[in-house]
Length: 305
Image (cartoon, rainbow, N blue to C red; front, side):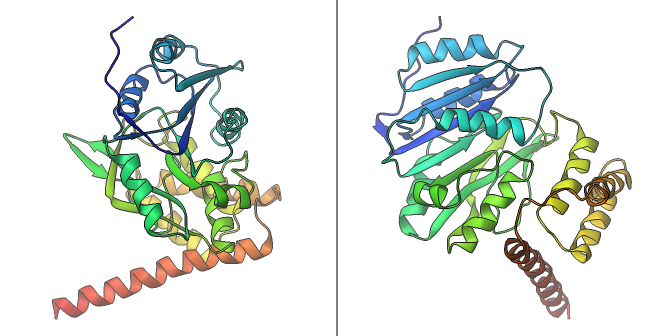
């Protein structure tokens, strides 16, 4: 066993829950970044969702060193199931929380590296705004030798590292065990008067690219399905398909796969994850993004003149 790593001395009133599957290449960097937090979690529950690599050995090593790290193991097949399996694992961890007087609950993936003051600063953001219900920093991904931010809508908190106020979490009924959970939670939170957002001055590193677990094209297919399931409008979806067609690699294929995913769900008449009122709320959020983009374009043209 390696010698113990110095840890942050102050303890925050929050718990971190991490579903993990086959992250042996990255998980130690995640563990060390959590151990070194200036305001460490009261408890960290890591749910090993049937890993077949060296993830269990690494978890055992660190859980023996730190009493506040608990490891649960779930036995299942090797297939990755974004959404359903991830949240099922999260829920298994959440059921192990004994202290119900916590201020916040955090879902944290184990392929991340967070700065040492990440959670302390995020807690301060919540303390400064009593209506803030769900929030995160912004995650960076490697692009060549540089780290670049992954763009997200202003109202969106990164699903890979999401802090939720406990009261808000209870009101929305937790996370749904379906793909699209990290959109539905924000829709429902906003319907109940909570704010959701990410903070660009809080940056964390995503150590592998989005969709690496299931592949880029399966990720595009999934995004099309999620868009249908969360009740988005057709006009905005066509804009998304066009944008993905122009920016994905190889060109056109990303947009095509997204369109196929949407149509598959539509033709099957897959049950929506939201009710009609929640769907309208989501469409309003999407329309506000288009309106903001138009205003930015007009502002840019005005300055050019």
